[in-house]
Length: 385
Image (cartoon, rainbow, N blue to C red; front, side, top):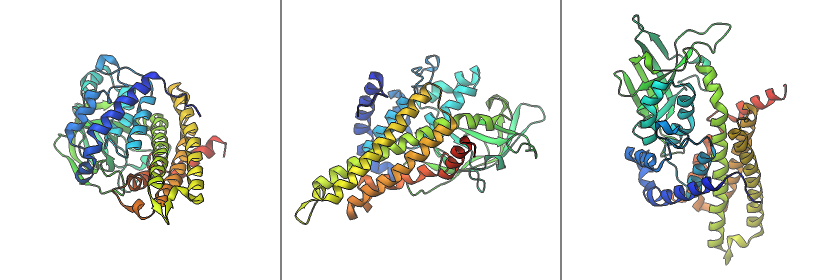
């Protein structure tokens, strides 16, 4: 079926990003996997290409677009090539919306030009050891100094994507204690300079997948954060986080769909080349039926993603609709990628084949951004249950 979600500008961007991936990422990707992240200079190359500035207003050096579909194009092309841009997706998909929505004029002038160029890479630190998805239970604190000039930040965070290479981290912390009536109150966001004394990057965490995405533990010991680096209003962070979740979950849904679509193409190429018992694997009825089922599921996921992208660009994507898209697309991807790996036989288990990387990378889609169980809870609540 003809796809209508993208226009000529999106397709022109697709051609540019596809060529860039093939020339500057695919040849060196094995080295990135060994290193655990792309070289820091690579992010400046993405800045030069304009990837980081698409949704940033022109006055700060960006393109001033208002469409999340460019991000979707990037996800699709990365999946087709079986690679990633490391932890930089957090920079644009997660951190930028907070800076645009809640940053004041002075902060935007100070941070956004460097954000666009790749000189300032950002990450967001929410999760803490022992709290998981329960953001209201976080214990990292930031106390205002007696003279009111700075906060003193103390605590620890874990599972922070982009945490190794980040220059600024949006740290969600307690500036006031919770109350029995409102556990979610008292949370604020500080945009912390990672060169600050007392700021420390702990272990770079070894993950099952997403091997080029630097994920780290962070700790803060009496880190002084100027009051000018408070993002938005003090005590409003929980509402800010909730506001951005639909886009975050849409991004995960898009990535999952793109991985599933790529898996079918990888499997299709493999079964046409691989010969077993004197004939191509593609010649067996089982192969045909499995790929037919997979392609049907992929196109269903594509329809869900495209509808959600249109809704998001129109400002109409609800939290429940984003949860539905994430739940459905991540479930589809898990089934499709597993079946496509099976068609590779033993070679599907070898990391030199992109299907193996997809299998490992895909698994986290049903965990981060809210687990599948949380998505079901949100959807059920929207039904009045």
